[in-house]
Length: 279
Image (cartoon, rainbow, N blue to C red; front, side, top):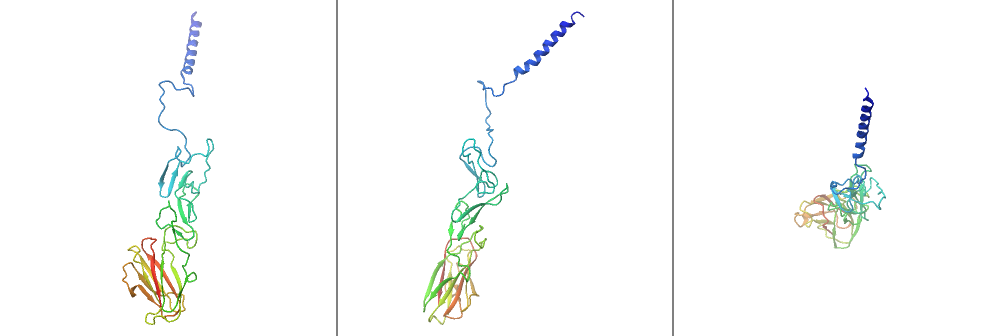
């Protein structure tokens, strides 16, 4: 019983040592690495959503969508992200391929993570080759897709006119009506034939598309005298024989007639057709 206080003192001293030792053994936060310190090889730097960490490379993970590593404008300054724009389409830093020009508008379908890049063609421009990188690269002539917009042609006595033109098509939306042009817009001409013509052939229009893709099908039509409704029509292919099989005839050799050429099928092309008008 005499030794009890000494025993308690020793027990208390041992407990104190146990409490102190873990604190001494714990590594300090932020300590400098020692000579045998080996950092892991992973980069734990936080990157902006939708963008790779780094400064320069880019990858394309969706057709027409380019993911860039656009760095912050200045150290410590966050980059502004506006979902729904061509610079942030579907995610911050997910940049659409292509460039906005007078003929092309690079678009994003939605201001959410569901946004998809797109191309809208302006004016009379078309994306014939389907490549978003060069946008709406082909430019058509002025719109002549109706009787009201028909290009005037004068045919004096016993004259003929040769016309080379094209009908462009694409699968892009268009800023001007009509918004879709997968078959292109027809071309119209208002022909005024005066004087004496060929009474045996009457006023006629002939179409040649031999330079167009082999699967092309076009249609040439002509109206009767004084009408703006071309009802006499013929389908033409690149292999249609030469001669009257490529022609349509009106009911007179002089007067006002309307001629229309339309595309019905075929591979998109910038190649031109040849139209021959005679009376």
